[in-house]
Amino acid sequence: MIVVRSVSELRRLVSEARHRSERVGLVPTMGAFHEGHVSLMRRAGQECGFVVVSLFVNPAQFNDAGDLARYPRDEAHDASLAEGAGVHVLYAPPVSVVYPDGFTTTVEVRGLSTPLEGVVRGTEHFRGVTTVVAKLFNMVQPDHAFFGQKDAQQALIIRRMVADLDIPVRIEICATVREPDGLAMSSRNALLDAEARARAPVLSRALFAASSLIARGETSASTALDAGRRLLADAGVDTEYFDVVSTVTLTSLERVSGEVLIVIAARVGNVRLIDNVLVHLGENAR
Image (tube, rainbow, N blue to C red; front, side, top):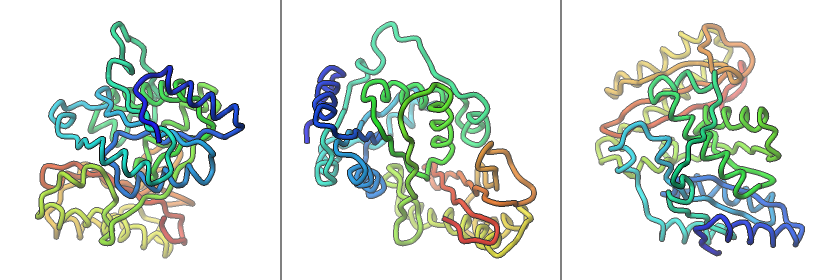
């Protein structure tokens, strides 16, 4: 595996792979790798002959300078995991390469950026996400790009951006990887103290309590959510949002029909966590 910092070196390696007729896969990340990231890398390796993983803690998507400063970073550990997963290039540019002096352009997907995370973090959060992902797509020009279902709103926004801007990349959304107790794997989990880590799995338990009712045919979103709310209350966890939403528009639903997304965000201790599950009325969640 090769670690590169510059766009020119990255493009040279990608060009060589294309001359070998290899399909190029990209896994965009902010580092602090865990098994969820590794699963994306392995999936990319199954579908593409040449895998690029980007490692860039994107300042443009943080609305809290303290949150940016606390975000876990360990490039040496990340590089070891990426190499073990069969990654060919770890692209870890400095901020000055991604946002050079005089940079003023942004990419925004309106509508989908407004609810949920947009309410809590502001629409500028997703403006930062879409801008950096658009840049990465231009830098790498991948055939496939791989994202996790845990960041469901982000994935939906990226798909909309790709469709709207005719970017020739196939977006692959991969299943959320969970700890044995159900907690969705996240780089932020490393910031949880022992007490918060013990309480954090209640987020997934709440999601699956609600989804199990829908899977059994419950059509009232409020009734389904009440099952999860009781678990959250018992654990002393207050949510920023806990809702059943459309998988297309992310709008809140009162009645369940077809496939829906159950979403949650909460602070456990001083760490903000998000999670979600997809469920189809009368079928098991995933």
